Image 1 (spheres, rainbow, N blue to C red):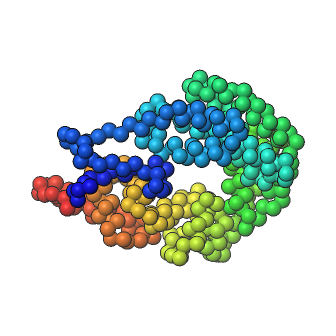
Image 2 (image 1 turned 135 degrees about the vertical axis):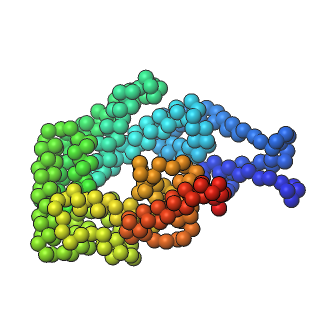
Image 3 (image 1 turned 60 degrees about the vertical axis):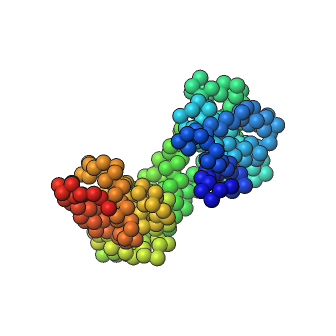
Length: 343
């Protein structure tokens, strides 16, 4: 192979070199361009065989193997069909495994919520069966939905929800609110919804009490965040510069809505500062900055974000970020007027 050989490597599973395809582009005539058409022959038959044989672990592993290859052509019919099949198999396998676990031990409240989510998603697949072309699995889906229904008729899920009501306090508030949001969105049974609604009311009362106590002079910003920020965002507390984010929290709030807006802002900054690569940085800063106020082309947008990212500067205040963006926006306008080239 010559020293000037051009190599294209495609990692089929996006994780190991041994699964890659190596092409010598010097062997391609003309302009050294090629279109790679990876035809996954009979992939659906392979998946179906694992499903019929109840080899569920092999089924999920095969889906992972195929996903990287098929997703290369996202506009293809093969990709569309594969996505539908992948969703069906994943929900079905997750459900069957939870049902099997329930025969050995009591499911946790999180596992029960996941099981209900699988049921709802399988029902959605049934509803759009003609569109997703999974008609051959109708009987399997109906059977699984019925199994899940029978399970919930005999399980102690209402007891678990009631237990959340009894365990609600300042320390458990964030987690219980997170769980209750899922319950309210997934379950339709009156017995469960009535308990969930009571829990929601108790949560609101406790949040208002915590804010009222904070406003009355107990300005413990760290605990305010710990108790009231979304459970999914609690990782901000572990950040070594958490105290810098706390400077954005006011000493008094008129209502929870204003506090929650500040929480959203500091978490956006945390996500930006935690970016591991330019693409993450680009996405995170776009969420914060680029709204109607900054109507510029994608070219200039990327130029500004690259300029800012090169500084490796951490932002703990939105205004500081906005100022830096404004500086680059003005520079762009000046360059346009001078017909200069962006560097």
